[in-house]
Length: 365
Ligand SMILES: [Zn+2]
Image (cartoon, rainbow, N blue to C red; front, side, top):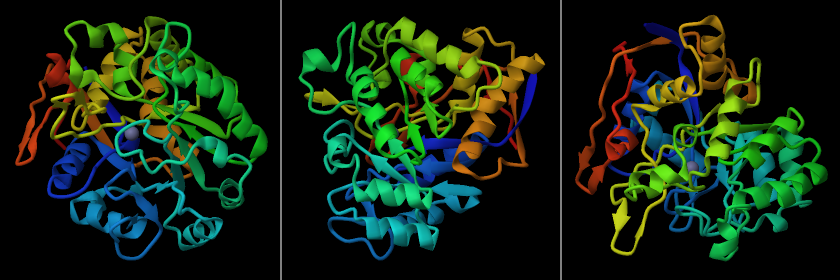
């Protein structure tokens, strides 16, 4: 079986910085990706709009140039959100919107994930002038939706997690205080988040990663497969079922692809593990496998329609740009991934790390 699809958009990914960026961008281009939203948690963070990089801040303009030079000029869309830090001002939002460089801002819970130490607690943003300026100028708020500062037992437990607490207690307050703010709930992992987004106004959408549609915490723990370690962490079977239902609902317009692909050259360390799964080169194949595991028949019109909505069209519609007119082809043929052996260490794709054979491949274009 062949699937010819419009080229798709990865509306949450990490290209990082430095010598290896070209490898990661090339992997995205090779998997039929027409555009990306590239996360700003570089070192230092992308926390200014324009101008040269400094010791403490990079600019969207300079980071975009670095990505362009590494091959990203081949994308028809490249969105770089502004990392919300203590230096962010309403005037920056206005200037960024007027220059066209700023289309989204990213909220990180302080110390919630990789390079998130510059984040400012959400309570300090709600009702404030930065969010108001974003509302006034149609700038999207991308949210890493986990309550910050919880002790371990509250962070992850059978009946509540940092994510479910965030969606129960914090997100409703943002919606109420900022009635026009457009919000992407990024990499949602729980039934609580899926249900919140489904019931929220149309200005709220969500991205879901391949790993959260494919795996549960049981897969991570069985054999301690640390290549599956990402944040927010994979959850329970009931959560995975809710995410699958959300993406498969006919005609749904709120859920779209955002891989959160995150290359790490040192995944496991002596006393910890870097958060993030690398799915460059293999994300559509993984998404297709997840849809099929969830019962979709990708050979049928209905199956293809729900897969295409999720992968190719809902994201552009939410961000307000046209989907791609170009196509790429997937074949129902097994394929394998292999690590990038970089000078800094190996970058291991998630399927390789999990010993997973892909049931799909991408036809060379
Ligand atoms: Zn991310």
